[in-house]
Length: 450
Ligand SMILES: Cc1cc2nc3c(=O)[nH]c(=O)nc-3n(C[C@H](O)[C@H](O)[C@H](O)COP(=O)(O)OP(=O)(O)OC[C@H]3O[C@@H](n4cnc5c(N)ncnc54)[C@H](O)[C@@H]3O)c2cc1C
Image 1 (cartoon, helix red, strand yellow):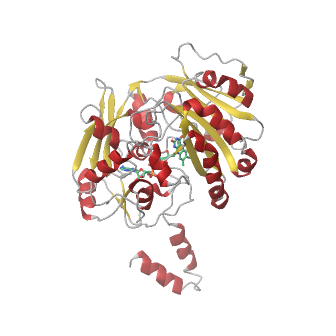
Image 2 (cartoon, helix red, strand yellow):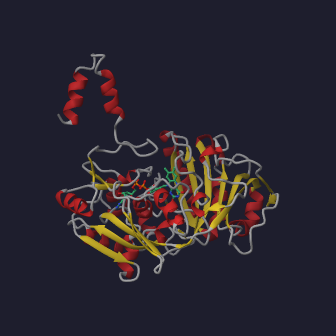
Image 3 (tube, rainbow, N blue to C red):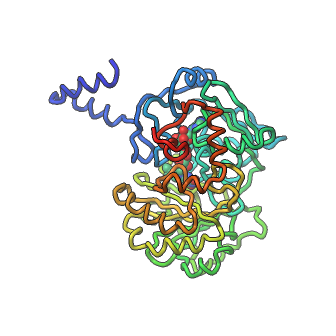
C-alpha cells in the first residue's frame, strides 16, 4: 500500500481511536528541514550507497534534488518529485599528505571529518558555527566561518567529482580546470550530485577561545579594523538593544604571532568569567569551550559542539554580505532599525570573510562582512522585516546567504553576480534540461519560475 493510499484509508477511519496514533505518526514523519520551518514538497527520498547507484538513479529520474543535512532555511534544496541522499556515502577516500589534501565522499559532514583529520595531524582552515552540516551542502551554498583572512569553506575545495544529469561522472580540479572549477564549487546544487570533494588541509593546530561582554558600539565604530584583526576568527553577537555588542568571541591559534593577550578588557568589553551561549539565556553546555582553555581547532572554530543542538533550534535565519569597506556604515544602518528588529530577534552575529574567486560566492572578488539574524520562528513577522532590512542595506549592495531567508528580487540578485551568465551556461552543460533545478533556482538563477 503506498503512503498516499494509506493516509486516505486512515483519514476515512479517523474516528477510530486505535488508528489515531498511527495517523499522527504518519503526519509527524513529514520530511522537513533542520529548523522545521519548511516541509519539503515530496517525501520521496532515495538513499544511495555507491557511485554506481547515484549514476543509475540520476539517469532514470526526469527531475530531482540532492538533499544534504537539511540545514538550509529556504527552498534551495526542495523538490516536488524526488530527493537523493548521499548520507550513507560518508567515507574518507584518501589523505594525501604530500599534496596536503583530503578526499571525502559527498555525504560526509564536517563533524565526521574533523576528528579524523586531527588524529592524523591535519586540520581544515576554518569551520562554520556548527559541525553538523554536510561538506557538499555547505560548499554548495558558500557556507562560511569567520576571520578576515579566511575564505569561506568552499575556498578549501581543490577538486570535485560530480554526477551530471546524464549520469556521467565529471572530475574537476582547481589545477586543471581553472574557470569551470571556479564556477562549479559554489554550485547551488544546480550542476549535479557531488559524490566526492577534495579539500585543502594544513598541519593541525591548537586554539584558545575567549569571550568578552558588552563592547560599546562607539568602540566598534572607531576600532573596527583592530577588533576584526585581533584574532584568527572573530564573531560579534548583538541583540541591538543596548548600543553594544553583547559578546565578542575571539578564536586564537596558539601559534598566532603576536599571541593574543587576554587582558581583562577588550575595547571596553569585559572578559567573561564563565562559559556563555551567544543567546545569553541558553545553556553554554552546547557551546565549544571558552575561557582560553587550549584545544584542537575543530573544537574551537565552531561555536556549537557536535552531539548538541546548535544555535536555538526553533528559529529562522537570514544573513547579508556587505563589502568590508562599508561594513561599519552597514552595521549602523541596521542599528537604526533596532526597535523593529529586536522584538523578533534571538541574536545577530557579525563576521568578516576574505574575498575569493568562486563565481557564485557572495565573497566573489570582495572581502566581506556578514550581518546575520537568528530570528524567532515567526515567519509572518520576519517576512515583513526582511524587505525593511534589505532596503536599509541597499546602498551597500547586500548579497544574501544562499541557504537563508531573503526577499531580494532576482533582478537585483543578478546584478550582484557578474559571472551569473557564465554560471547559467556552465549549469546547462552539466544539466541541459534542468533535471537538478527547482522553483528556488528557476526564480533566483535561471530566471523563470516553473
Ligand atoms: C544552526 C545553523 C547554523 C548555521 N551556521 C552557519 C554558519 O556559521 N555559516 C554559514 O555560512 N551558514 C550557516 N548555516 C547555513 C548552512 O551552513 C547552509 O544552509 C548549508 O548549505 C547546509 O548544508 P546542508 O548539507 O545541510 O544543505 P541542504 O540544505 O541539505 O542543501 C543545500 C544545498 O546543497 C545541495 N547539496 C547538498 N548536498 C549535495 C551534494 N552531495 N551534491 C550536490 N548538491 C548538494 C542541495 O541540493 C541544496 O541546493 C547554518 C545553518 C543552521 C541550521
